[in-house]
Image 1 (cartoon, helix red, strand yellow):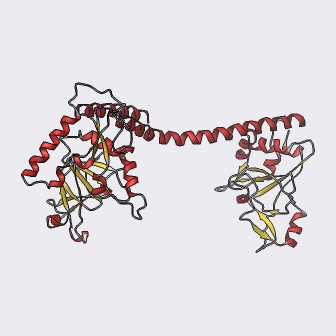
Image 2 (tube, one colour; image 1 turned 60 degrees about the horizontal axis):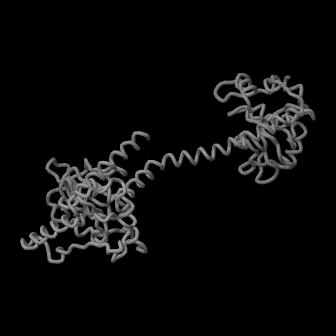
Image 3 (cartoon, helix red, strand yellow; image 1 turned 90 degrees about the vertical axis):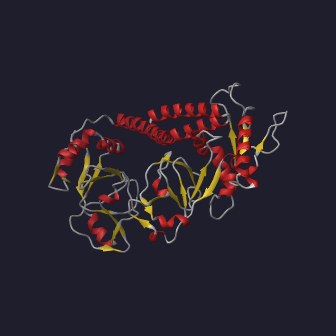
Amino acid sequence: MRLENITRLINDGTHSTPHYTETGIPFLSVRDISSGTLDFSNTKYISVEEHAILSKRTKPEMNDILLSKVGTTGIPVKVDTDKEFSIFVSLALLKFTSSIDVDFMVHLIKSPVIFKQSKLGTRGVGNKNLVLQTIKNFLFPLPPLSEQQRIVEAIESALEKVDEYAESYNRLEQLDKEFPDKLKKSILQYAMQGKLVEQDPNDEPVEVLLEKIRSEKQKLFEEGKIKKKDLEISIVSQGDDNSYYEEVPYEIPKSWEWVRFSTLVEIVRGGSPRPIKDYLTSEVDGINWIKIGDTEKGEKYINNVKEKIKKSGLNKTRFVKKGTFLLTNSMSFGRPYILNVDGAIHDGWLAISNYENSLNRDYLFYILSSNVVYSQFLSLISGAVVKNLNSDKVASILIPLPPLPEQSRIVDKIEQFFAHIDALI
């Protein structure tokens, strides 16, 4: 059938520019149907008198179809309101005979059967227009009315499934983006609970490791390099009934210990020479000025820095060496990085060093990246107006300490899993 054979009227809106008013009768153009529905939220208005004149030629009514002729041509919208309104020339108005299901026609016009014809039938340069004669000549297969109605029911049932699928797909797509990070965090948590690798009874016990730390601290104290308060070895031991004498985040293997972080490392805060612009330099012999802006979220190392400071600023900051851990202490606090360069750090950093005798470097990185540490950081700063970590707060956290050989095995297993996850992304 040709479209003109099943319609009572095919016409378009007024070709003359209307006289717009602040209120009155809505006057619709292509933009008011571009969403696929009638949208009166940003429409213009004409007077009741002008609408009465325009309605003598083109009057949209319930169950008519509006069709875009300009811009994105061929968009059909069913009139589903009794509200009075007029239309501009950019819209065509289609009124059908009683033997036609209007919802069927909306789906038909959206289909490739009509859509291709509407594209081939446009004229002009730039913004192509769909002319009325092309619309009247649309050719399509017409089923009986009862079958039109069954087709509409089938299409709308299928579209409901499509909408459900789209929602599910969007949720899965979001989960897909989050899944690698969540999986890595789960692996870290598993590792820090002593469940990622088996314990080896032949490993040197943690008690021996702690005794070595105690002896080393005593030697440093006698040499005047540390204070008496730094001699303390703070652990949280299990009783004979496997209960702890102090609250801990969770139970760990018998061969491990919960240890205060201050027992195993030295923690200091950076410093900033001010005003910093007076100390920045482009000289080759300048000192690397390590900023949080030199990091990338999710990266392990700081390999390069963008700025340098003059040597004269060193007495107002803190110089740290390659291999030192840096921990953000404000804003996005608690992110660990390993330095691959020497340089000076500002007061937005905490530097963690002297860990080599008790902690595998990569195991320390994964501890600081894990939820067991981050959740303690959150607890320590809860209620604070400014969410900052300081060296005392970080020193007070508990970390799970396995024997050194097991630390190495844990790191190997974590990195093996992480490599598999990265390969799947």
